[in-house]
Length: 276
Image (tube, rainbow, N blue to C red):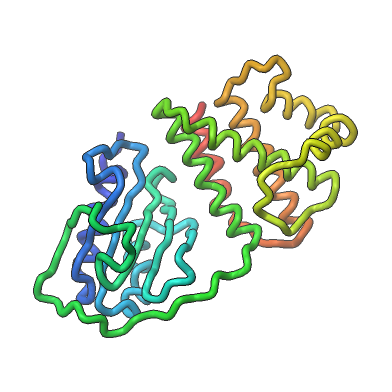
């Protein structure tokens, strides 16, 4: 394994770069790093405490891009002022090493991160009084692209838990398989702008499988859901995901809605390489 692209190395680079920002007075981590359980499948959890969130907000992505181009971003905590909370995927790293980034004015601002954190850098000299904050943003209307970006975390979750032989892989498999079936149903019954529908009703499922679907798609779906009842979870997941991604592109073209094709290809290539 190339040691330049490990989660440990990425975290070290982030600490080195952000500690040079005059307004950053504390950097911490959480998650697997707390118990020294980081492995090649671990993501990078980092918290920055800033006394000038407006400055940090203007600079933080540029700092991260000095390590690697960012290929996709998912944002959280829209309803809270003085919080930047994102998942960032880096083009030069595998999706395992996505960055879970939180920027706040002090460590206890979000109780989820206190006290289960490990401090990596602290500047005792910097004034910790918040000089400039940022207002909360209204959560934007969900688009096909934001839904897709959030959903790709399930793909990464499946590969990670499959590699670790963790039973949670079946949960990720189930969610992606159901999303694929919903898209297949929409293909035959009209594309919807509802992006978070979890699964079909039993009547819709029967309508799709026994009345609508063509032979080629039926053959693929029976690979994802073998009629024998004997599940090869890796093969089923691969078939489900690649059908899902093909249908997603068709839906995007039909609705004339943007999706980040570069990010989708990044995930496809990752999946093909990791689950040969």
